Amino acid sequence: MNTDHARFDTRAIHAGQAFDPTTGAVIPPIYQTSTYVQDGIGGLRGGYEYSRGGNPTRDALEAQLAALEGGAHGLSFASGLAAEDALLRTVLAPGDHVIIGNDVYGGTHRLIRRVFGAWDVRDTTVDTSDLDAVRAAIEPATGVLWIETPSNPLMKISDVAALAELGHEAGLVVVVDNTFASPALQQPLALGADVVVHSTTKYLGGHSDVVGGALVFAAGRDELHDRVKFTQFAAGAVSGPFDAFLTSRGIKTLGVRMQRHSQNALAIARRLEEHAAIEQVYYPGLESHPGHELAARQMSGFGGMLSIALAGGGEAARRFAESTTLFQLAESLGGVESLVNYPSEMTHASVRGTEAEVPESVVRLSVGIEDVDDLLADIDQTLDRL
Image (cartoon, rainbow, N blue to C red):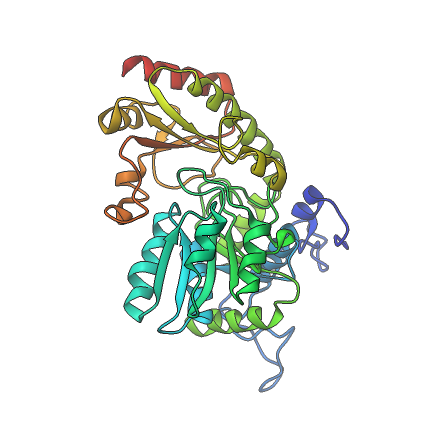
């Protein structure tokens, strides 16, 4: 089926997902194989030689990912950080410089600061919602502008189109981490970004049962895609066929799931905004959020992630995180079930003492697709016990 002009939900279900021509199976088979028989030396069937270099199940997912983001090419990795590492190792060299937001996933900050820092790559952390701050941070050695919007965990909103224009004027590769929004709610490539990165573990997989990552490249960035694909092949951080299958399966319901995530999160954000125990709610769907108008322009919904600052500080935040019942205390996000996280000592423990440190009063919620009244009751009961 040609899905080039299909709408999002149709592409999510059909792109790269042709039925099996041998049996007619609606779901493409899982090619759980490491190698492929050749028709004589160098006589590859369909170009397949060894599954680190290519696998039909992974290829199907990569076509699906590219279609979702409106990109030319997709690459599927063993994890989100593996995707980030392959991209950065391809485009950076010792002595280069990266601009990164001061509120990003702790693992991204750790990768750039500690792993690439040891390779003599420097970074500057700025508030990427401040165009002047980003402009001032650009220097001759800058190679990458890394944008995360909404950011993790304080939900800052950055202007992708304006930053892409600014970055391209300086000759930078503009990368957007679209994990929180997902392509169902935000299309960074259409706004001018060069590459989109995902932890497919989160909303794309959607069921907390697979770890993976992805890169999607804009049209016209074929050469960059080819270079990163070589890095992926040479270093080997590919997704396995069963992981690719699980991710592809999750993607098919992404559109409807994101609608429910967004509806539930907005209802909870509004309830929390009115509660005396809450000092601040970080959710771009609220009119009080400083990035609300921008988010409404560049996103089609506000997503299922929100954070709160407890008026009682770190002690109250810890009690809240350890007292919910439906909201389960765990790392990660984006699954159908609701999770609560204490970033300061969990997902962002590695950035304590840096410019990206998360306040101890902050709790992050990944709002699932359960009945919203049950989720609200869990929140209310927990706050009553503080």
